Amino acid sequence: MLRVRRRRAEASGAGAASARGIRARVGIREGLVSNVLNPNTALFYLALLPQFAVFPGRVLTDSLILAGVHFVISFGWLALLSVLVDRAQRLLARPRVWQALDLVAGSTLVAFGLRIALARR
Image 1 (tube, rainbow, N blue to C red):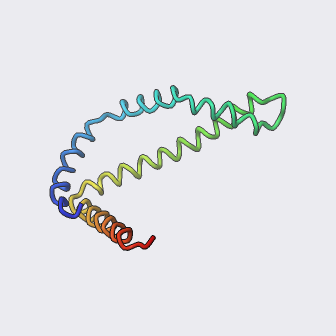
Image 2: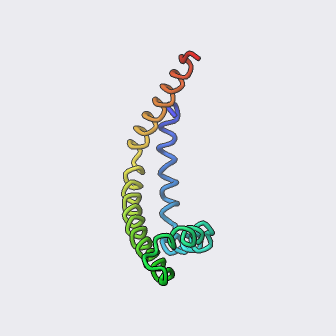
Image 3: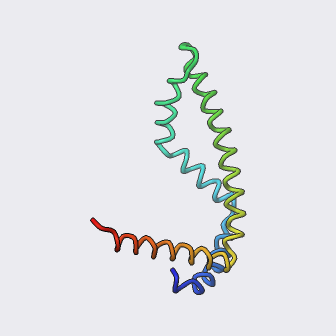
């Protein structure tokens, strides 16, 4: 990481250009299909949410309300996260930022390696 900083910064510009070509509609469709076909999501709602039903006779209604609340909170969080990632992508596309990150990461790995090498067992 310390030796290839310059080459990596130059290569990151090409990768960012190809990543911008992905359309938002394709990403939304892939995410939706991935979540709908994920059995973990169904198991989560079937196993966890009925425990929080307030009225015994309205387990389905209460579970659907809780699932809706979970959806709204998750959608808001993921929308905020996507905005932050988009802004971070613009920042990380700069060669100087890549060089600084490579320098910090490389130095950290060297420091960890030295610590392991000098540790007594």
